Image (cartoon, rainbow, N blue to C red; front, top):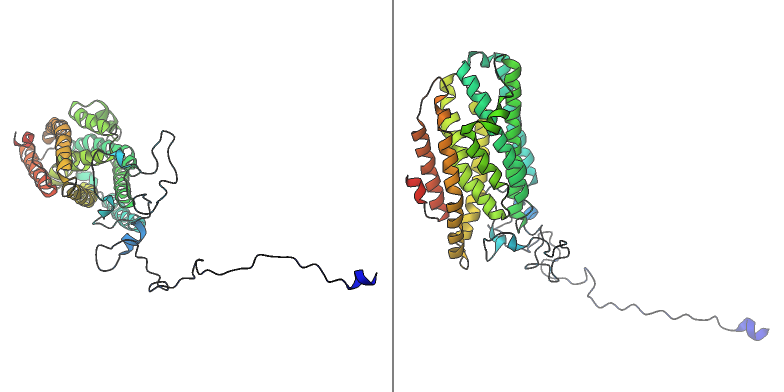
Length: 370
């Protein structure tokens, strides 16, 4: 018993902890205490907030995922395949939105526009501004501006909302997502405007726009182009066909070269404010679109093939968009006060379109000379 009582306790063996200085935080280097990240090269001397919250937020095996995409689709491709467009780039991450759009700007800019439109509509109803509208102008707004609301809504839901998942970088997809928000908000603004007019004027037909968009002869080519755009699978072609071709030859023709020009002559100072927000949106959206396609046409490796590809896209989309523009000619004669001709409006539209193509680096189609 004495031996058992005085025997030493059993000693357990544990692995000895060895520090190798490879654990997180062990190594010190010149910027180890800095809160500034330098995994990308800013466009300027210092990174902007836009760059901090967009660049490399969307992963890419060519930059950081050395093991490849960490997720994929059932039919094979993973992540954001570059094969989702026929356009090529030696570095898709080189694109930065000149508008520097990100989550905060969406809310800030759109809330400012919503306040502007709301105040405009409230003041118009308070002042009885619609009372001086003649019957011809009421019919023009109900039929044509109401019909255009469907085009804006279609592009918002089935064009830009589709594109914003398909681009290969977060910078491209964020810019397109903002584009979708612009279109959706503008379509809603036109719908609210239609409701206000219906409540304020007994003679205003607030439902005729459905029939006009569905069956009016002058609007069917426009409707056809919008619906055909929604069927395009190539995200870059979809963006090109919409923002570069359709919006130039049809959108600006209707909004800027017709409605914005003749509204005041018909005693309407409200509609230009509403439509002007849509034109302002497109001006910003055209800025990122121009920058993206100019980057692709100037790409050292793929610039020539991209220019050839974009020429094919022009050949595909310019003729139907010109047909849609010409089909709208009869609505120029509907207002009581006609201050400009369709030829003048179309001429200004073609000139702006030609200038845009030259800025991108593309040849002007022969169809514009007709």
